[in-house]
Amino acid sequence: MIDVSARPLRLLFVDGNTREQRESHATGYGTQPAQAYANEVSVIVPGAVADICLPADEGANLPDGAGLQSYDGIFLTGSALHIYQIEPAVTRQIELMRAIYASGTPCFGSCWGIQMGAVAAGGSVTRNPNGREIGFARKITVNAAGRAHPLLAGRPTAFDAPAIHLDTVALPPSDTTILASNACSQVQAAEIRHDGGVFWGVQYHPEFPLRQVASILGRMVPILIEEGFRADEAAAHGWLADLRALDAEPARHDLAWAHGLDAEVLDEQRRVTELRNFLTHRVQPHASIRGRV
Image (tube, rainbow, N blue to C red; front, side, top):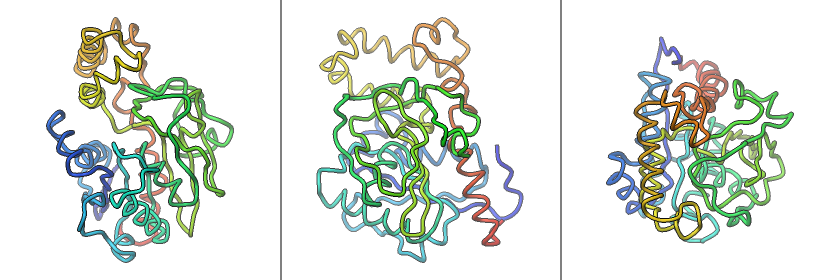
């Protein structure tokens, strides 16, 4: 938990999903993605003011440059969209990300978020030729730059994290520092600098507790079977039941061992390491300089 003893932080959560996708998530999980994200961050910084932005929606009221500068930090959620499928729900978000860079406001993104950060700065994202990474990103390996970078402070040299994605950053922007990779994606964590702004992002989901992973995968059972992640419906639902049980009882050594999960995923403090580091090393110093805390 981070102490916010003076003026509360003002944070913006940008939901990358369409209305239909948000409602589908809420039907299964009880909360739309941006609110779920805000709830996780509120545990780290109690009392922070959280606003939600919905740029995928036509006619959405999006903040301008001055509005973006009024925030101490910005978080980008994941999304079920594909950034290379050009449509207004996508292009509005790219333009918003470019405005975030220009505003200079500290920004962090998960999954779709890092893809958005890359494309808005001139990089590219494609369907991953290595296939889908689902449930967990395994053996994320921190490189030399990552070991020296505050985003990954406290993470071991190799770790697992919740992850659900089909797409990946194929060509990072010119001013990108890759911090971690694994066999599935060359860019699992990175810092991107563009147009005066600094973005930190990860391809995985430190904001996802196991119950949220299970909720999302519960809507993807046919894909799990079709792509060979699980043999049949019984196996798929058995896996999801185990994840829910582990969420309720993280000390279940039998289930943790069976699914190869350790404290980097199961411990609530360790799982959100990147979120806490972003708030500690980027958001709070930025707010302090501006006299907000």
